Image 1: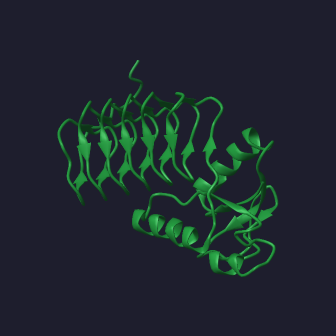
Image 2: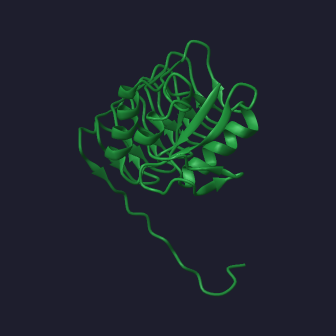
Length: 219
């Protein structure tokens, strides 16, 4: 199937690599879509930005009937990220899943449209992952979790079993969410946080970690 990568930043380059390296047997990359950067700019491998979503949608060659999208807009603005996905969906575009062959997805797990799962990630039995959720390298989702849509879960995060996570959350590197905890919507959780009790909506969870500087050779 012919696909366009929606986004043209660092995350788009990463997603492009995984599609090219591991999914070339079923997905053919034609170029990139970006609503802020100029059309014609080369992103990677001589593949260019073909225009904004509106411009691409107006093209017969890249209409929703002709191509799918791979979603690759990062987490710097989570609300804009969700809005971009939903706008493309309303236009009729459908989003391909990108699942690295070195990820472990148990039989019966449900993955929504546009989900990206990178290498070393584990999703255990009975879990549900909503649309446009990004599971970075080494993420662990234990059994019977329900994770909503438009979440960005950074590398090394561990989510305990029977956890419920809402929509549009950013969960930073190396975070641990213990078994059975619920997390609401639109939260920002910084790196190496421990979430051990319920987190509501529109919260920022910030744990401060001391960084020690040692002068000279510590050995």
